[in-house]
Amino acid sequence: MLAEPVQGALRLAAVSRQARALGLGPGLTLADASARIPYLVAVDHDPAADALLLGRLAEGCDRWTPHVALDPPDGLLLDVTGCDHLVGGEAALRETVVRTIQGARLHLRATLAGTPDTARALARFGRATVVPPGHDEAAARPLPIACLTLPETTRAALALSGLKRLADLADLPSRPLAARFGEDLTRRLHRVLGREEGRITPLRPVPAVSVERAYAEPIAHAGAIEAGLRELIGRAAGLLDAAGRGGRTFEASFFRSDGSVRRIAVETGRPVREAVTILSLLRERLDALADPLDPGYGFDLVRLCVPVAEPLRPLQTGLHGDETGEDAFGDLVDRLVARLGPSRVLRFAAWDSHDPLRSSQMVPAHGVSGEPWPVPEPGEPPTRPLRLFDPPHPIEALAEVPDGPPLRFRWRRVQHVVVLAEGPERIAAEWWRRPMAPSVEPDAGPARERAAYPAPTRDYYRVEDVEGRRFWLFRAGLYGREAGHPRWFLHGLFA
Image 1 (cartoon, rainbow, N blue to C red):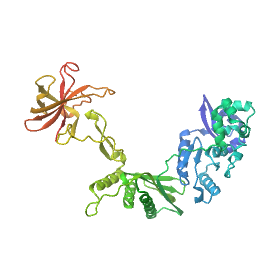
Image 2: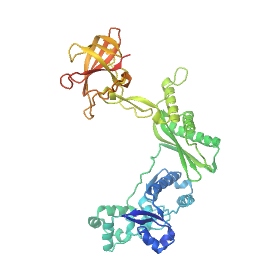
Image 3: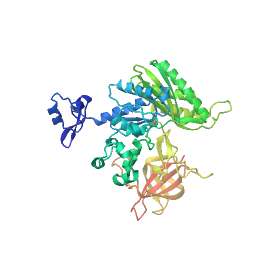
Image 4: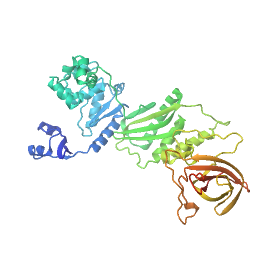
C-alpha cells in the first residue's frame, strides 16, 4: 500500500486488492489502518515515479497504435481504430495488450469500446471487456454516477435526487437536466453513453510516413538490426518519392521484447529521401550515442517514422551529374548534427533589431530561417561591417565640433587621421531594455575592457584614414543632453 501526508496525517493513497478485500481503502488514515491490520506494510507514495512509469508504459503501447494518450494518474487511452486487424481482431488485440502489461507484474483492467469516455468509464467502474459496435450505451447504463467524475457537490445533489446510475439520467430530458445541474453534466453523460464522439490528444503527433517490421523471433545482432533498418528506409523513401515529398526528421524506434523502447532521431537541413543519405545519418547518430543501443533479449519490432515532411524540389546537379556545392554542404551539416547534436552546430541568423549588437544571433543549423539578411544597394558600400567588436573598443577621438565627426582618433596606441567621414547614423537603445553605461575595469588593457550598452543614444560614423583603412565609430551619448563629455568607441572594421 501507498501512504501520503494529507492535512498533517498520513493517509492511504492506494491499496492492493488484498487490502481492499479486508475493508481498507484510499483516504483512510494509516493509524486506523494499522490498528485494523497490525501486519500492514505501507510505503511512501511517489507521484513522480508513478508518472514516469505511466509514461514508459505509454511508450511501449506505441507498438500497437500511434494514438496513445495519458489518463492520469493511472490510466492510458489507446485509439486502435484500424489497428486491430494486425493482431487478429479487437479481442486478440485486447488480450495482447493485457498479457504484455501483466508480464511486467502490473494489475490491469482493459476495456475496448466505441468512444474513449465509454472505455474509460467501463474500465474503472464496470466490467473489463470488448463492447460490440453500437452497444456502448447499453453497456454504460448500469454504471454509477461516479464514472462521470463530477464535482462532489454535483454528485451529492444527484444522490439526494435519487439519481445514482447512468440509467437514471439517460432517459431524462437534457435541457431540464442541464438547467439544474449544469451543461457539463449532460456533456459528460452523452460522451460516456457514446452519443457524442470523443477524441484523445496523443502524446506523439501522427507522422507523415510510418513503416515497421515485426519479427517472430527477436533480433539482437547488429547486422540484422541494420538490415531491417535499411529495408524500412527503402520503403519510406519509396513512399516519400510517390508523394513528391522529402523528410526533414527521421525517427527509428526499437521495441524490445521486455517492453522497453529506444528511439533515435536525426534532422536534416533540407528535405531528403535518398536511402543512402538517411542510413548514413542514422549510423552517425548511433555511433555518437553515449548510451549504446542495448538490444537486451532482442527487438521484436522496428519502426521508422518521418514526423516532418516537406515538398521536395528536383535535385540540382552539375554538368557531370554530381551534386551542387549547396547540397554537399547541406549533407555535411546533417552529418555534423547527427554526430554532435543540434545544439552544437550553429549558424548566424539575422534578427529583427536596429541595434547592431542584436541584429544577428547564433541559432541551430536546422532551425527556422528567421529574418532575411539585408541586401545592400547595388554599387553602394556596406553600411555595417562584417566584423564587430564585442564589446566595442574605447578610443580617444578629436572632433572639430562636439557633435561632429572625428578628425583623428587613437586606437591601440596608433594615431589615425580621418580623411573621409560619413554620418551620423543615430541609434537609440531599445526602449524595452534598460540601457547600461560603459564600464572599464581599472588598470586593464583593451582586451579586458567591457561595455554592454555604452549609452542610450549612439551616433555612428563610417570613416577612412589616410592609409585607406575604414572604421565604424560611434559617439556614446548626445552632447549636452545625455553626457557632458561623450566618449568614443570603435565598433567594427570594414574589410
